[in-house]
Length: 82
Image (cartoon, rainbow, N blue to C red; front, side, top):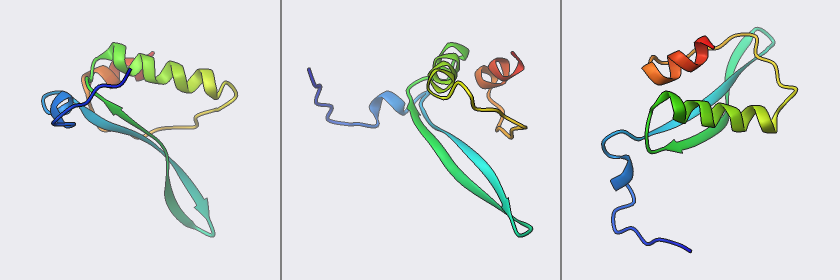
């Protein structure tokens, strides 16, 4: 079942965002940023970030993180602390 929305931005105007994850790659002394994931989110709660991170971990169980950089949002920050 599909839904036709006259204003596709409507669900995202108040609390939505485009969440992205990027990797930093170093080669020949140059650091480059490589986008890995984009997620259009309608809310920014801790539960929403937990859901996104669970899907990532489920799909990439052997991935490892050496470090990260994030802009501060309470929901995301609380989940990273775990």
